[in-house]
Image (cartoon, rainbow, N blue to C red):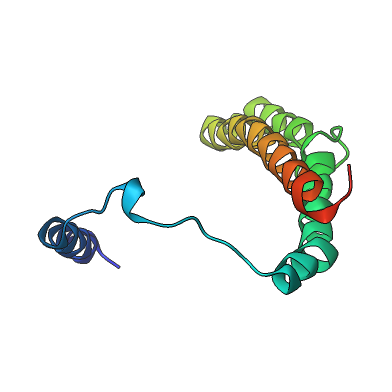
Length: 124
């Protein structure tokens, strides 16, 4: 999609929101889910999310031998810098910095999953 199409889509969406008005948070009732859905979330979705968070955290915090880890990206950036490819080294350093930021988000996601599990799944 080119820039003009994106601009048109964003403008149309903004005008649509402005013309319909935005409801305040007070206008909405809290979202509730049934016990069957809670059971399904606790038995199926929560373990999958925890597994994914664990795998990503392990991968990101791995050493230079773990493909995709922050240390691996920094080692590859150093290799590129040694070969004189500073553009590639800068891209790899940027990816490593973004990975560091994602670790904080993964920690926050794990905290939210733990809170949900404690509140709804009966597991502490």
